[in-house]
Length: 200
Image (tube, rainbow, N blue to C red; front, side, top):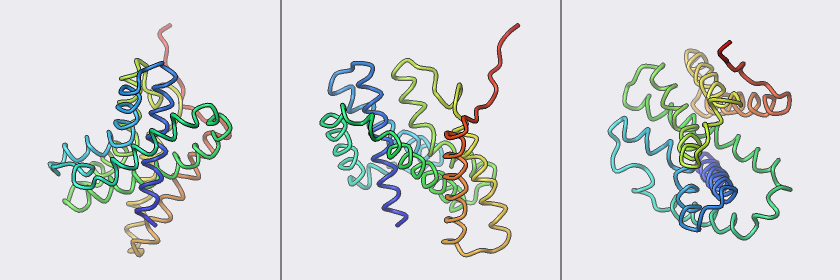
């Protein structure tokens, strides 16, 4: 199930990147590249920072195939995706929870401090979107609107608090991902945003 959710998250992020690129009127190659970096950008940056090379998608080409499938789906059904925004939001949110956990686990496995593990989890979940927005000449959405990265940080804190109670890993992962998913969905529903700062 963990692997399945990872694949679903990869598809959702790749679709997000492809649709963003098409809204910017990029060519086919540009659309594919944006889809690719959105899906694996955060994980790639994380693996490079912790010295885990070759990075994950180079060792498992399943991710490349999945991104290719998402790219084709985005091209074929681009006019219908407006009707599927709720589904995409749900998949994206599941991906957010799963990728945060993957980053946390990577950090724990090599003995990093919990604060650094939380940073890795946040980076894994969010930085593909940051790279997407920068390449599409936009201020990354996590810096100007949604409480996206903040939710990952909250999930990481919950994870390490619960870990002190010696819960089984499956229960620990389930509760943490449910916290991230629930808070994300509530933030979208109730329009929770961090305040913006402006010069007087």
